[in-house]
Image (tube, rainbow, N blue to C red):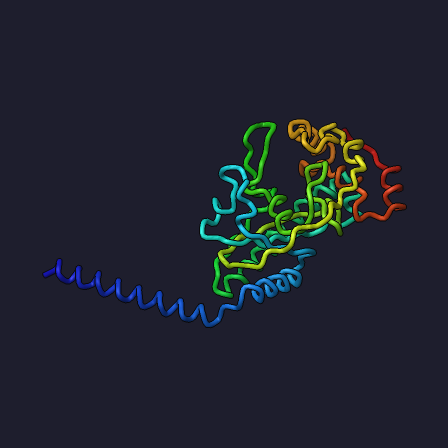
Length: 275
């Protein structure tokens, strides 16, 4: 008799689960906005939450990502990415490398993490799943002493979302803030309308980042990229001398994109390298 009761209970639970699932689906269908409308709502919410720029891209735009670093490795059921950029304060960038520029790096990471959580909650309120990708400071995988990568490339996501292009310094170059931004990405199973890719390259090829890099880690040849080993050694030395996080920021500081020319001349004239 006990066995028959257990079997009956199991059948009853299964029926109840199906009924609940159908009920939830009908409720979600009633409250979910259209694809374009949801995209507009998320953009508006993100800007109100403090984002400077917002872009959208589909998972397929990251299909050439290295193994283990695709958005699907983080949120397998996801379809879209919401990418946010937040600018650095110009005066703090001008002080780089310094304790203050290093401190702003950590402050901004904390800020965008909270922003991404709030945006993810908003997406969930619309009936979808959402998961922020940790900012670089928190989402790093150190593959060796001289190599370090994020759990997913925020820069690739930002480029796919139309927020910028690659710079010689291996950073995202945005039209409005140059490379002086932090990036965070939110993955979601909502189907969102992708943003058009940037139709021009903000990088003007001036090679100032190549010239002023204290580690000589940046090449004028885009196909070479940066030497991460040299960059890491420089970051460690800068950290020792400034007492802050291991950040440098010189290639952001000297980049002329979205900078006032007279102010940039002053910055370059007063720049002192610590390494």
